[in-house]
Length: 59
Image (cartoon, rainbow, N blue to C red):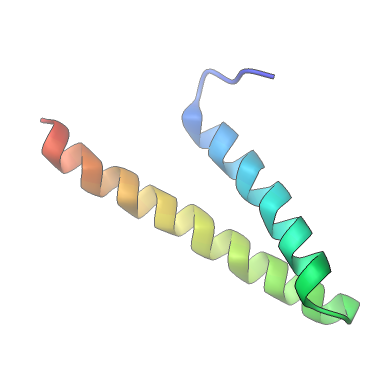
């Protein structure tokens, strides 16, 4: 599956990684959801900030 936008690929990858990590690292369902959403937020925001930072040096 190839997307034209890298951000869609990154969000999809982050979602799958967060689901797997939440399932193997937390026991209760409520904790898994909370942990998965937290990881997803950190991964997406971190990737966007890092991409913006790299863009500053590409000009």
